[in-house]
Length: 114
Image: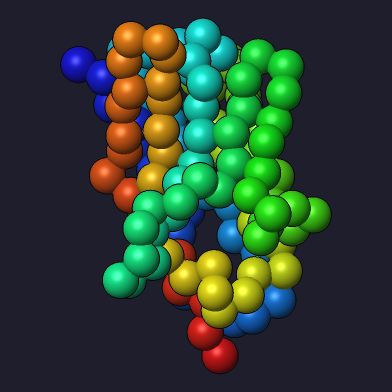
C-alpha cells in the first residue's frame, strides 16, 4: 500500500523557515513526478512546487523562497520554505503521480503568524 507521510509543519513567525518532509513507501520517488500542494481555508488546493528526474517547477508566489529537493536513498522529498509569509498559511500536501496513478499524503499544517 502506497503511503506518503508528511511532517515538519508547525507555527512560525513571518520571516522564519520550515522544512517539510514527505517520506514515501511502496513507491520509488525518483520514478514519479513528486510535488507539494497547499490548501488554505476557503481556497482551492494549489500547486507549490514539483520535481521530476531533472527539473523543478515553482508557483510564482514561492519562487526564490521555497526549494523542493529529493533524497533518493531515503526515498523522501523535501520542501525548504524560507522567508515565510502569513499568506503561506495552509495545509501542505505531498503528491506522487505518473501517467496512471496519483497519490496524496494526509497533509501537514503550516501556520505563519506573529
